[in-house]
Image 1: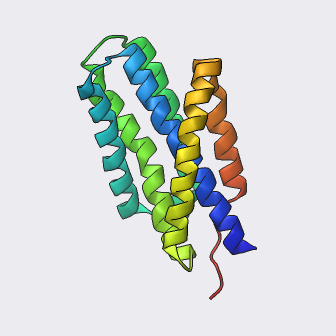
Image 2: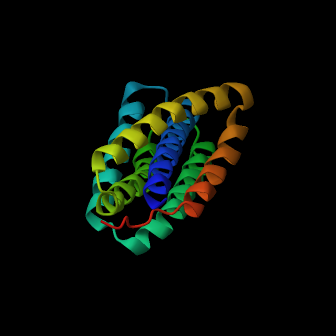
Length: 169
């Protein structure tokens, strides 16, 4: 049961990571700058956060990381609205994007210690990410920014309920 629960958690994490990333992209592209520099700034910041999350991960952070990622997500949304078309906002926004990306690093590091086969964790997360891309695009196309107001906390609540557990050998 725990093994299946962890696989579902990895799949759900993939969905959440995609929704967060695409939300960051849409916020920055729509409100700040629709250039390749802003796109790659968001991408690089997420990856820096992911690597930092791998280094600092522990069990306590796994419990707090979804909430920190949501706080960073909504901070970026607020900043992009307040600093519309301000290229100077990108470095500040990148810090919050990195904080959101740190959740991915914490999640992967902790799942690596809980899963008997980390390849399945990566497979499930990747499949969830692909589904999350479709969900984010369809949600945004259908509901606009309202989708990003509702979807991330709902998905994160499901992940908190499914908190990964150690699998007995």
